[in-house]
Length: 323
Image 1 (cartoon, rainbow, N blue to C red):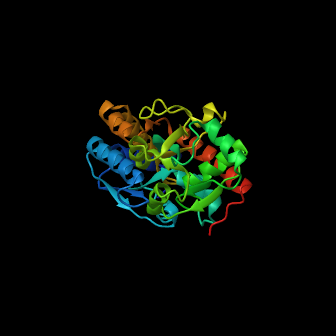
Image 2: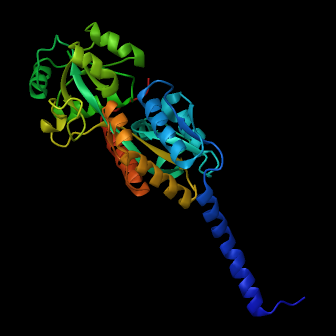
Image 3: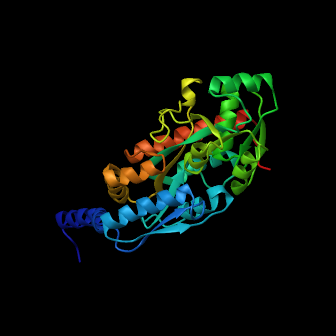
């Protein structure tokens, strides 16, 4: 049977637009089943708290469950690989963090976070606290730098492990301040007992876990590491006030596998931004010591790319190696 040319062209055009229409309709109804939001650092920590906050909000806004899946191990790489290898349908998402940007240089990975992840939206940025044991007499960053220069190699700088955010933040401080500090890595839960005992005298600690010790006077906060002061510690200066250009922070956002439909990403981005704009949600972030991020998928992608470059330079300059 011979089909007239005009009818053939009409059928071809209809066929070519069908996938687009189908994808649009699918995005409009998304999600039709539970969505898994994977985080790679285990239950109870700041990443888990952020994941549950945004997951609850998205569940309420989109009318379907966002299930938080804890896949700890390999400094978040197990969770990340599971997501970038998942079907790109919007039903498996990753809580992306500063750790992902650090890991891009610290590890030989079978995936590329910039190539294999589709950024959705940033959620929150949280400072670290530059804190010292009371045995260190310094009461400002400038005084600490002077003390460290007078005592090269004698100040123990604790971290939560080689390549952790506290470690790379400390290495960047060492380079910018021109000081020689002795790095002592601990397993996460061991850091604060070591600091309390005076085994280590300096720590760039996450605000959420540090604030209680600072308020109790167990440690002295000299600075926060974000570009702006923290609303929780408004009297504590930023490191950048002494070392212009210094910035380090824990940050969290959402990403999915590459080739996730653009319409799904746009829908998720809108709902994340709407969540962040909610005063109740902002108050919950403030309890973490965090400030909202938000923005477009491109904004979040630029943050990830910039952080990969920044921490890559620090890691290579310090010749950091996994032990």
